[in-house]
Image (cartoon, rainbow, N blue to C red; front, side, top):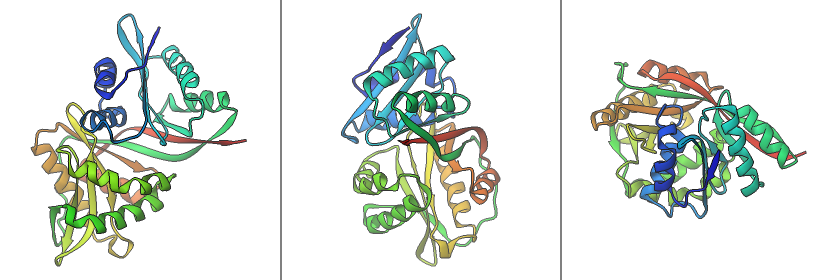
Length: 285
């Protein structure tokens, strides 16, 4: 097996694309991150790519945008995964963690943490969902609109609250919020929507990370006083329908498996779970 280390996102997608596109829903994260980097190569200070090739075809792939965790694509086999992890350990031994799908992610986390003489623990268990058609859901009062740069202060406040409520390492995301907003507002394949009721924003939903035929929804956030009124359901349903009408075959999203409310909301809209994803973090023994 040959280990390739592409210099940029377009090269990574060219080499790993045939592997990743076998199942866009399962590989939405590496596809979406690489797609964003293709349009905005300066979105992160340091990016690493790895592709394992066997007999001319890609069999394993991963990427990392520092300071975030390694993102692992679904490998074709256990031997391909072993070859990939060996190269990653050689190049980037101080990984803070890794995210990927079952059934391979547990093995990968164990190998990587052992090599670094650290312990691994599950930081977040997520459901990976895909939607191809939106079901009719009860519509609540209000309307959806696209967020604009004039909403920046509100977006930063709500995204900060979302990060500390839902993410295992929120400080990294909060520190990058300004850059994240700049990237999304300057991209055709990313943005935010707001649901307004009585002229006031009451819920937020973003979209980004386009894949060859799909796009990822998220984050989705409603301030606690406005929850359980159906705002997020109506917003995500309308946003998903709009994205499908723009030519995307699928919409994807991640949910926290411990949050039964959000999982039921997305299922009602028409999202179906395709697999489970685990985020492991590494810590000193």
